[in-house]
Image (cartoon, rainbow, N blue to C red; front, top):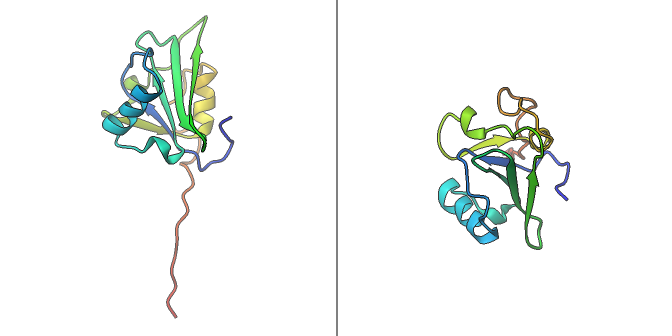
Length: 125
């Protein structure tokens, strides 16, 4: 299960993808086209050309997981229609949840603050 933590980063691939791709091929897309490490614990979202299917790839600490959803009615939002460039859009876990439920509003406006990151401040006395 993908945890509810705000530390999880979600990246939506901004081009339609052939959803016959497996774990290894999707991992190669993450590494080669997004320049990200698939084993870092981030979540990667891929949407098919027809927008009726989507796959989610993530590392749960023990292995790669692929989740797939097919909509019977309607279509998923198209991340490539809202992207400003190639690569990936960064979403929050809340936006991913809305996407998986079929919301068309994902990616149009920021629905929540950006992912929280730890910052280290060193004080020298």
